[in-house]
Image (cartoon, rainbow, N blue to C red; front, side, top):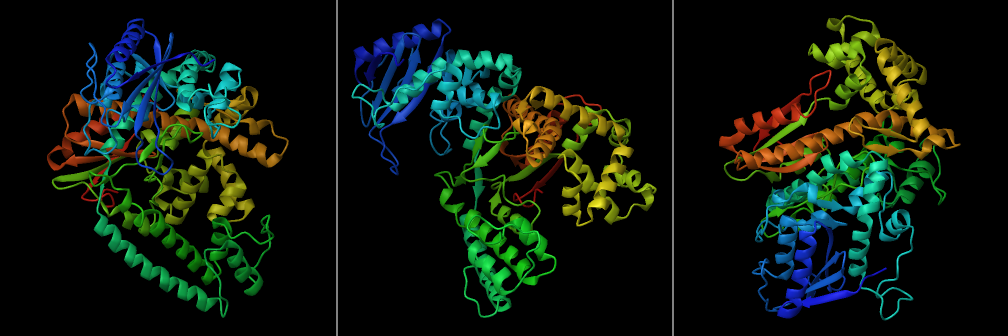
Amino acid sequence: EIPPVMRAAAGDAEALAAAADEIARAIEAGEWIAAVVDDDKEEGALFGLTRTLWLTTSKGLLALEEGEGGTTAAVDGFNFAHGVIAGVLARLFMEGRVASPDMKALLHELSPIDSSELELMDPLAVDSTRIFDTVVAAYLLDSDRSEFDEAYLADTYLQMALPAARGAEGAGEDAPAPAARTAALTLALVAPLRECMARENAVNVFDGIEMPLVPVLAKMERAGMLVDPDRLHSLSEGLATQITEVERSIRDLAGDETFNIGSPMQLSHVLFDVMGLPTKGLKKTKRGYYSTNAKVLSDLARDHEIVRLILDWREKSKIKSTYLDTLGPLRRGDGRVHTTYNQTITATGRLSSSDPNLQNIPTRSELGRTVKTAFSAGEGSVFLAVDYSQIELRLLAHLSGDEHLVRAFNEGEDFHAETAARVFGVPVSEVTPDLRSRAKAVNFGIVYGQQAYGLSQSLHISMAEARDMIDRYYEAYPGVRTFLDNVVARAKQTGYAETMYGRRRHIPELKAKNPQLRGFGERTAMNHPMQGTAADIIKIAMARVSRRLEEEDFAAHMILQVHDELDFECPVEEVERLTAMVQDVMEHVVDLRVPLIAEASTGITWADAK
C-alpha cells in the first residue's frame, strides 16, 4: 500500500521544515529510509524542469521537489547551499540508514561521474553498514536471474502485486508516481530481503563484500580514464583502410558474388551454397540457413582462406565500431570516459562494465592492444596494472587440498610445465613448448569443468586423446577428482554451489531431464567455487586498497578493474610505494595452502602496462 505523500518544494519554508523534522526523527530513531531521485525529463532529453527526491520513512512518503531556479529556505540541521536534494542526501548518508534500488546512482548525486563537476561528498565517507541496495540483495539470492524488476521483487518478497503507477494502462487519477511507488516498495523490501539473506547464508557476502564495494565503485566511476580523441580518430581511419582491403580480398575469393559480409544469411549463402564449404555437423538457424557464428567459422578457418579473412574483417569492424568510433564521443567534461560497473549482471559474482564496456577490449589480440594505446595516465603519471597470477588454479589447489598441486605452487615451479611432466610422463627438463601448452589447456579446462569434447575442440585433437589427457590429469592430481566429484554431488543435493565466502549460485540445470543441460549444470557447479571465490577475493582487495589509498594519502587513483586485475593512474614518484601497497593487500586478502601472487607492471599507456 502506498502511504500518503508529504510534499515540500524548494522555497516553501514551512513544508521544508516539516519534512526536515520527519527526516531527522527517522534518522534519530535509527530507521531505514528509502531514497529515490526522479526527474520529469522527456525520453531523449538531457534535463527536466523539476527533480524530486522521494523518501519513505515509517510515517509515510516525502516528496522533496527542486525546480529550475527555485530559491531554497534554510532549515536547521540541513545544508541546502547546493539544493534540497543534495542537502538531504548528504545528511542521510552521513547520519542515517539509507535503502535504495540503485545505491551507486544515489551516491553520484553528491559525487558526480564527471570529475569536472563539483563533488559534495567523497563516497568513501559513507559507512557501508548503513546502506542497503535492494537489487544487490535480490541478486545475491538468485544470481542467475537477469532482471530484478519491481513486479518480481514485490511478488517474490512481499507476496503481493504492485499497484498500478501513474501513466500505466488502467491506472486511476490517484495512482502514485512511478518513483513514489519505487520508494515505498524499497522500504518494504528491506526486512524480507534481510530475512531471506539470513536463511540463504548471504548476509556475510552482502555486508562484508558487496555493500563495502558500492562506494569504491562510485569513486572509480568518477575517476574515469583519460583517452586521446585524436589518437582514436587516427586509429579508426587506419583501420577503415584495412577493412576495405580485407573486404576486397574476400570478394575476390568469392568470385562474382555481391553480398553483405555483415549479413549472416547472405554470408551463409555464399560460403555453403555458392562456394560449397563443408556443412557436415552444422546446424541451420530458425530461418533455414547454416549458422556462421564464431565457433563455426573458427573451425572452418583452418582450411579456408576466405573464412580466415571473414574473421579478420569481423574483428576489425567490431573494434572500429565498438571502441574507436564511440569512445571519443563518450568523453565527459573532464576529457575522460567513465564506465559503469555492474554488481548484479554475472551469475558468478564478477563485476561487469558498460557504457563503455572497458573489460571486453580483447586482451590477447594486437588490435585490442592498439585500442589501449589511446588511454594514457596523463602527464607525470603512469598506468600501474596489478594482476593475480593463476588465481583460479591456486584456489583449486587450496580447495581440493591435492598434495601434488599444492606442492607445485609452494615450490614456485612452472606449474604448467610441472603438469605436463606429470600428465605426459616426462621429466620437467624435457617438456616442450607444445606439451606445456597442452598442459595449460588442461589445467584451465579442469577449472571450468571442461570435458573431453571441449578439450578436443580447443586443442584440435581427437576425443580419445582428450579423454586420455583428462584421465592422466586426474591420476596425477587425484585430490582434484575427489573434490570436483564432491562439489557436484553436494550441488545436486542442495541445488547450489558456493564459494569460500558463502556466495551461492543456484543451478536448476542439475535437475534437468536434458543430458546437455545437466552437463552444463555439472560444469557450472565445478567452476563456481573457483571463479566465484576469485570474484570475492578481488572485490575484498578493491575495498581494502581503496581505504589504504585514502589513509596513506596517495595521489594515485584506482581507475579500472578487469576480472583479476586492478589498474591505477599513478604519479611517477608514487609507483614504488603504490606497487608495494597494492601487492601486499592483494596477496594477503586470505590465507591459502598456496601463495596468492599479484604481478605488477607499468607503462605510459594502458597498452604499455600489460
